[in-house]
Image (cartoon, helix red, strand yellow):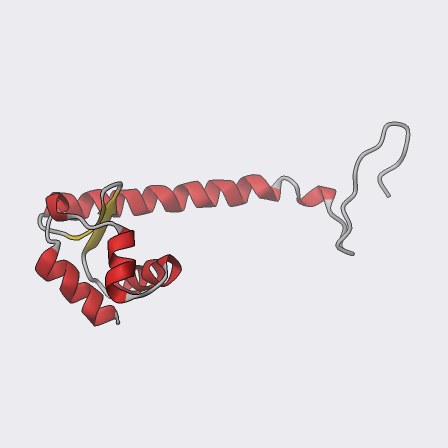
Length: 110
């Protein structure tokens, strides 16, 4: 499936102007959106220059298109890391036994 999707994008969707929506790819390959995203991620990990933006997926036609998607991916990874760091602030409110500790006025937290 990976190779077919990569070839389809390379032959039919090279360059941002020829981007294809995930819905079209899902229908064409009879796969779910989750499976499509997993496949694109795997292809990217292997070095396949699949780009994406609001218009959909496309095979990089230029270095600028590839640079743009790389920049987007790094930005998303920073945002995910920031969210995880923020969630860590809530850890003191949880006990090791899995129960949440809520501070109550006049009560103790133990």
